[in-house]
Image (cartoon, rainbow, N blue to C red; front, side, top):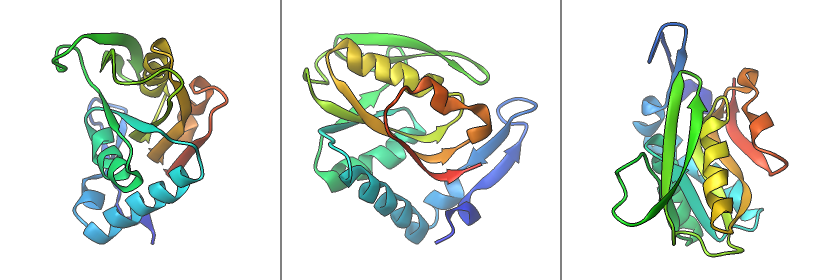
Amino acid sequence: MDLAAFIRDVPDFPKPGIMFKDITPLLAHPEAFAFAVDSMVHWAKEHRVDSIAAAEARGFLFAAPLALRLRVPLIPLRKPGKLPYMTTSAKYQLEYGVNELHMHVDAVRPGQNVLLVDDLLATGGTMAAAAELITQVGGNVAGYLFAIELSFLNGREKLGNHPVHALLNY
């Protein structure tokens, strides 16, 4: 299936000069969305994964069905003030600003292999912060998995030597 046919380009969003890759047409097509999740499951099964962590909000859309299919815990990585228990945090750069991720301090057991999932790899800042959260509490990064990679932004450079896979590359 050609997943690229279900990705819409939206120019100048969220600010001028950004070409936003909109996944909502993919989500609106159940067969395409299922194909994307199935492809992610196939890749993840080739790696040792004890749990899946995803950054809000679009990362949750892929991580939740992936975690269910793999029968592993899902770890939400959220913006400040969104998690009800004690958290640890890491700041990161977006291609258009600065943000911060939080995770419950007990979300990852020491030595646990965590697959980091998001809808899009751009500059790598979000997932580098996610990896920092995982390692802060003694977890291991099992790899990174994305629906889309904007390879011209060189985000992989921030992700170290862990396996990285994207279903689509631009």
